[in-house]
Length: 147
Image (cartoon, rainbow, N blue to C red):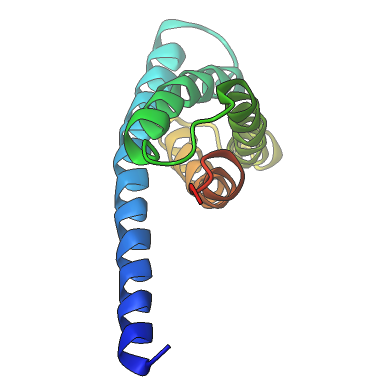
């Protein structure tokens, strides 16, 4: 392969990755909004512990995100074996849920940071940590590239 073709190939691959990151970000950003809305509503309307409210909110966001990823962000990826895809998505989402809510749990019960502001701050920190894991796992194991 000549240097011009190689450079063009790398540019095309980089452009595709950038488009993927943007689509992932759109769905993920909307999912964060759903997550935080359900979290704060459940905190305000119930007397449940903060981490329970967070797990419920994360679970609602997981369903929202699956639909967004499957039908928007990764719509062109291999969709063979939807049951297996959904099972992998659920597995990696639960790992992300543990990461996300583990951060909140440690902040709340380990350090006693339990105000509404602190809960939201550490919920967002947990979401950020889990998002890095989810991006890698979803693109690698769940929504595989067609070949």
